[in-house]
Image (cartoon, rainbow, N blue to C red; front, side, top):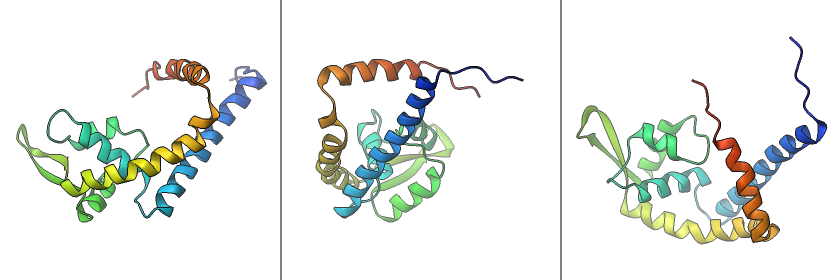
Length: 151
């Protein structure tokens, strides 16, 4: 099978997108770590739990909502539970399932992390784009989210 032709500029754009994501995440992770906070994935989980319409989320629903890939969600939730940031309870609609809720300490930590995250995000990303450029980038990236992931 022959590989399809992809113009060099599009291959370069793909590579730059991946490298930029890695760089931006590294800068934000470093800022959080330097300030004594847990990783960005923890923030993302806490934010989703805080914003949940119902009290808490099932682990599968949480996994579908978080922004970062999380292949070891159960291990992450175990660590966050040991740190007192989340609590688990039985799912009233499914006796075998569970509901994950943010704890009062989790709300506090998430709120404390935001200024550090926001400062790093502004410096590493926001200050490098005009509002018009951000809108264009958002429009371009939105095209990829419309793709259906097989499986």
